[in-house]
Image 1 (cartoon, rainbow, N blue to C red):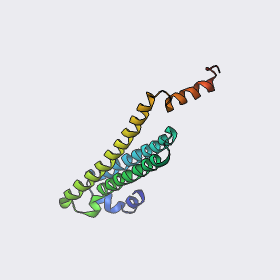
Image 2: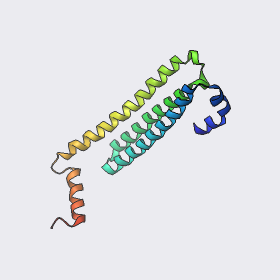
Image 3: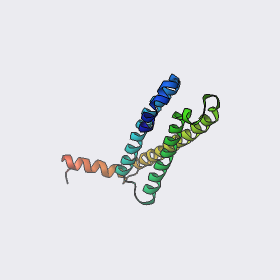
Image 4: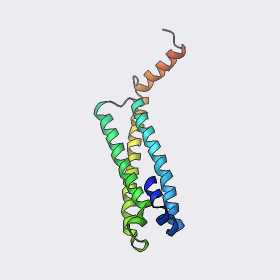
Length: 144
């Protein structure tokens, strides 16, 4: 989106209203922040020990729904290149809905991961207990 906006600077920033410019600038940083959060979420899932089919499902769902949200928000930001100001409301409605579906699903996926980790906390021989034991052994606080 950055290079596309740069090529169209004369058309965009000389003729558009400040509301449209603010939409692009605000959306751009929100997309970058969400992209960073998505990368960290995938990294945490790897550290948490997701394996096999669960790992594949988790990864693909995160990628697909984040792409849906990013694509919808990008179209929302650049809507003035697609449609005029007077006829943009249907496009705004659709892109907002798709963005909400993408981000909402990402939050549900994150919630599922956190519930799994929380449930594991209360298991006697869960991942939390083995992780805690490994940390204590590295510090030399556990006598064998």
